[in-house]
Length: 431
Ligand code: EPU
Image (cartoon, rainbow, N blue to C red; front, top):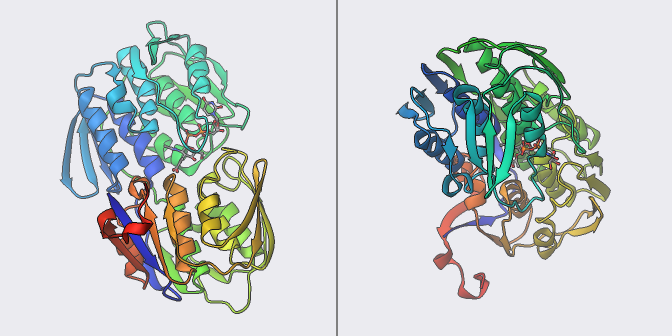
């Protein structure tokens, strides 16, 4: 298995480019099933999650061609309606197939994705939305079975305990674009990735009003057609690089990202006193003396502070003098990285859904275990600020969502090597 060896190497300096957004590309790939014509997607990141998703698309009958890196041409002439467990279990986002299969085939059988380390990931809202579209939904043998022979638009309130749902909104919008009548979706997710999906659907001939707002009006059309679309930039990757600059007190320009996609995150960094320069499509982090200021953050659906940048900010706050409080409202258990940061010397207490971080701690390298995608990023960021070597195991989590992570960071001065676990000193290897 691959591991990273990361050594603190002082300030990072230079320009680093952001790729296409994983969480936009996944539902967008599923959306290609909504037409029998070819959909050409550009700026698709090269990640293991994209390989899982294209494998599932092929399984349900789509032809997938990759004429060059980052571009996919997908043609879904004839489809089957079953997405089996062997494929779905590899990636939760495969639940995004429900909407397109329901819309195109008027029936779907999609395996329910399994557990997830960041906490329960229910799909009750996806099911509620489909029922509101007059679909019959049954759960048996670990599958969601949908009969959509009588599908039609209607009013849907899609909010749950934590507010809106990102992939739930994607699914219901994709189901509704080919459903007769009008669907009024309230409490729709407003994440930029949902906006990107809606923009592609409109290019394919869908009628959607209110894009980017919590209230979407979708007027069903009979057919969608082919289109070409470039996936938006990955705001979470960009935010991770901003923290890499900040935690090393470097001068790092993160290129290819509109700062407006990261409003709540940049606002918190500004409150912390991080000097930054914001351009139309870049964020430059500047070096600073002394300590940043601690912050209080609560993760919320967009435009609130994103849960996917919670762990990374936590890593930065270990290096900030004073008490920071990070409260996780989307996935209250998303603190699996905390015990690993503690092993590196961080002073963090978990109180219910909050992490109370007392800084600044002197971090030192240790063998640590990545538990999920964003936790992996946080451990690497902490390792940049630590003395000595940090060995990070289970980095396959990172490979799901960060494209060429170590190459991009090495180019601006990071010391991060991809090795095999057999290269690790024997006494550091996990049991
Ligand atoms: N929820 C329900 N019922 C549902 C669906 C969601 O109660 O039917 C709850 C969840 O338990 C959670 C909240 O609603 O508390 C929000 O979940 P959401 O459905 O929005 O999450 P998701 O669509 O499964 C996407 C991203 C996640 C990101 C979340 C929140 C993709 C493929 N995944 O997940 O990304 O954390 O939105 O922004 O888009 C990541 O990239 O590391 C990642 C986990």
